[in-house]
Image (cartoon, rainbow, N blue to C red; front, top):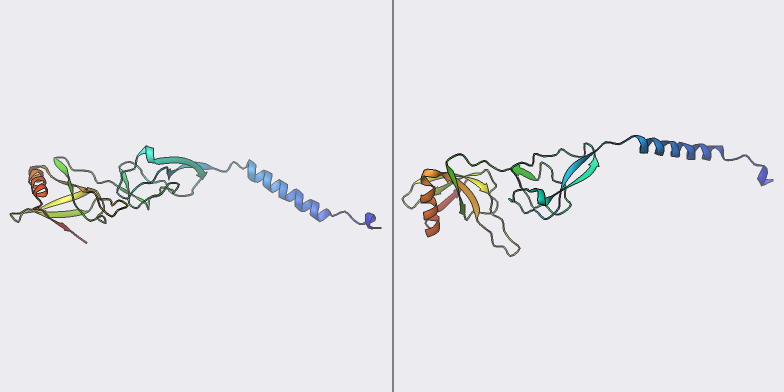
Length: 171
C-alpha cells in the first residue's frame, strides 16, 4: 500500500521556492560596471597605458576605480590582477622649467620622492623622482628619472656623466 501514501508536498514547495528565488535573482538585473585589470605584466614604476589595461565587467561596488591618468604601478602587477588604488600612484608632474635626467637610484625610491644631489663643488641641488628605477630578472637595475630645475640641470647631467655626482635619498 505504498502507492497510497501522501505525496511529498513539502519537497514540491521547497523546489518551487528555489525556482522562484532563482528566477527573481536572474531578473533582478544585478548592476555591473567595468573595472580595470592588468592585461600584461606591469613592472613597478611603469606608467599605466591602455595597452596594459583590460576592462572587464564585474558586480558593482566590487572596488573603487582609481584615477588612471598620469598613474604608475607602485608594485609589480601580474596579468589578471585588478588595478586598484592600492597598486597605483600618481606620477609627479614636472614643474615648468625643470628637466628630467636619468640617474642611478635604488629601486625602492618611489616617484614623487624628493632627493638631493651634491655636485663636486659641494653644491646641493633638490630633485623630484619622476620614474623609479626598475630591476630586471638578473638583478641589474635601470636608471630612474629625476627632475631638476632647468638652470642647473646641465650641471647635474654633466656631473652624472663623469660619475662625480653624490645622490642623497631621504629614508
